[in-house]
Length: 349
Ligand code: C5P
Image (cartoon, rainbow, N blue to C red; front, side, top):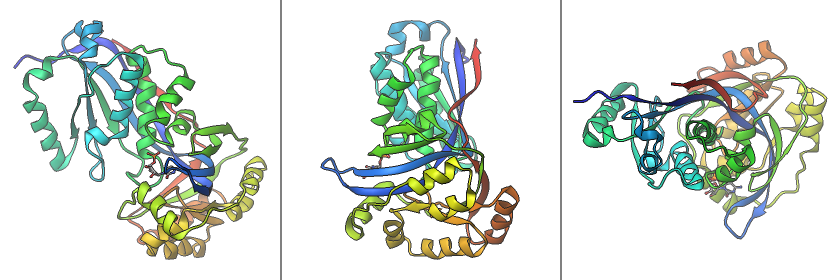
């Protein structure tokens, strides 16, 4: 079997943070089925890393005709919960960018491989079965997951944002960040924010963004649930159980401006909580346990099921984490805001 050769094109690694919603009000259901939101988003220091590179016979990947036929292949190290390749947001972002820039004609997205355990064997088998296609130029996206999968922390959207930033360079698309945001909005409502990062007020379906001033750093306990929740199911549950709300984000915005963790803890708010609790009643008790453990405030992250507890400072967050370990399958301590997508490694081979 001929040895695979890396094309002498660039390889780009992008590190991208998770997001949390400090405030989320649902104003109602829009005619297109999406829900109109007012939400305050902030990035938090749990990261995915995506490496994008060109693989295949030297030279062909640089030829426009070669690129039009190019396949996008996704690899990842998640053990469970990742959607199939065609539904994966990083892969979908790659295909959308390829089409928008005229770089890619095909929507072919090859099998997902994993780098560990049983699914790694499936990944290798898929690689072998590709046979001759392995000699065609292709773009490989290699994902290292640090953000909970399907946890309400925009892990998939963060991966899509990372793919857009990385491939914009690898493929030389020269899209501006605004153009990338327009492509990203079609992939998912959180993708435009994930491309920017920091702290933002979002309206509409969550894609119209305004920067928000945030001073200092806030310290969180991030508590994952055993079973993921699908965002669409939580919004459907909101349709059944909830009414449009008129909550305003002023108290959260003021707390961020004045670096006031106590005020922020009191102001945390998420209208999707009753909708998620209707599907997962235990989450309500879990939130109460976080408050009993000394959190300044606790809130469901986006559509959940991850819960967030705010500590007064980093040691207080660690103490809360120790007190609730055992109640949740995974508890992590993290800080916010955490910037935006960061090009960690840029190699021109
Ligand atoms: O935009 P995204 O693909 O992340 O949304 C996933 C699902 O969540 C949508 O299909 C929709 O059912 C629901 N959603 C919504 N209103 C929003 C955002 C998401 O109803 N503002």
